[in-house]
Length: 214
Image 1 (cartoon, helix red, strand yellow):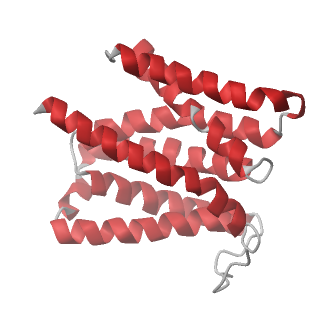
Image 2: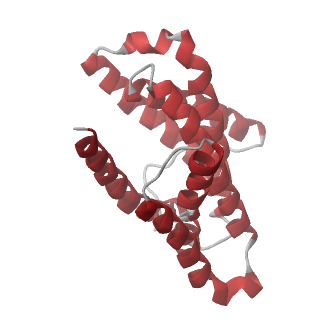
Image 3: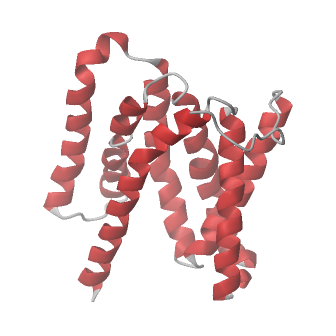
């Protein structure tokens, strides 16, 4: 039963990886008309609306006031919802979508370092070699352009180093409350913080065109 659940989880992660591959391209296209902070903030708010609907359907709103899990949910918000996406979105301003997608693979290696080396969790040997292969593959693809390594590449690499810490706190919170409640809090808080930052640096969070020029 446990093995079957692991396989289902791996399938979901595979699908997420495929969708994630489209993320840099769509984000860069949106920069034609919108500030990165505005894109990030409103995407988080829209995600919070979606998870709010899920909370309503599943009747799990009580998870939001679970104070034992709240600290972990807020730390997950800090690392994943704010730091990770800020670094990634700003990184995309100074590099290509292709580079961003390749460097993002390094998150698998850094996750292995956190959970296996520091947290002493056991991983199948195939997973270990797979994480190393992801890092080596990214280096091989990027090596011809190392002489012109962009600042955006460094920001995205930093984002991949931050992400595992968010996953760590998110998993701890997930042991106490539902997944949708964790994602709702993360999206709502992060979205509000990012839009507030956008406002104070001179962006216009409410100035959203109905169409995006491609």
